[in-house]
Length: 83
Image (cartoon, rainbow, N blue to C red):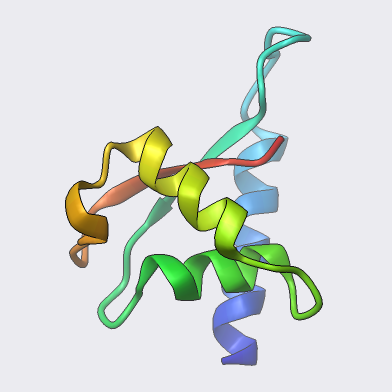
């Protein structure tokens, strides 16, 4: 679990470093490739951190990615709203 969190965090930070300029009022976003066994709850929990409630991030992931019935598959690319 810790290794997955580190890989996710590093990939998010690495992507942000090379993302280029963004509009100052646009929310920051990053992409995440769904891995086997991932769930929206699990992804949101890792991104939100151990003390945070992942439910708002799950809702944002569903809305942003138009996820029908909350079903994701390995290989799907999710846009992760960071802001």
